Image (cartoon, rainbow, N blue to C red; front, side, top):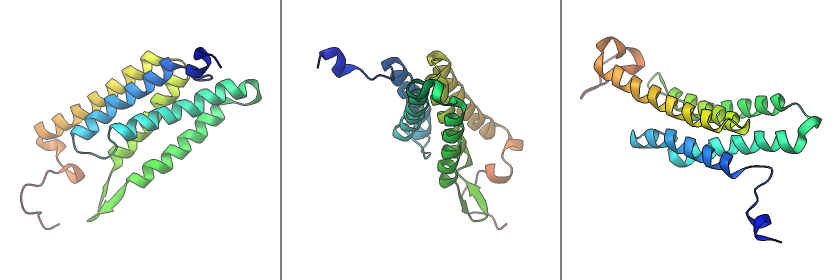
Length: 159
């Protein structure tokens, strides 16, 4: 075994692995700093895992399979993972944003597996812009603080 064989990750690429870990870290860092579920580790692993499944299916199965079927199954599986993140507390559904973030991380993994590394990184940045931007808007505009987005100060009001 040569040194090159030892460091080979075929059918994956080191560029793809780096892009998925970077993208997951970008999104996960925002989530972790905000004290939300789905931090850096989870985000990087969801992104990387999706990349591995799709890239391996594209390369290893090639003409023997339809890559869109693999992508469809990944989307379904990630949907179940996201559903597990959501819960109901005092009549309010919590964790929908975390579930949507997990779904977006999987989408980023898919796009990177299709050899669009820079697009995946840009999507990660856009995801953070949306998450942070909406937090700023909800804090700034009273009309954005209705329903489940209401910020409670002190004692919780009777509903």
